[in-house]
Image (cartoon, rainbow, N blue to C red; front, top):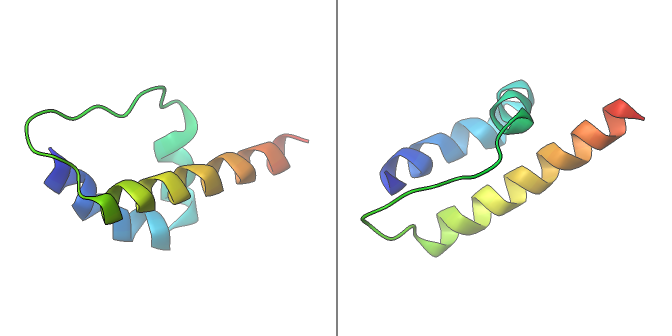
Length: 60
């Protein structure tokens, strides 16, 4: 599954609407088996933080 997250990162970075919808109701990101690479892990963290900031700004 880590390859799936790796494939998603460029799209989540490039498309704010996709990023917002992807993280809107997400409570847990889970994967098993192979290890998630550090660059992908860091990118997902940054993308999630950006999505949360945008959601907070739009709800105020």
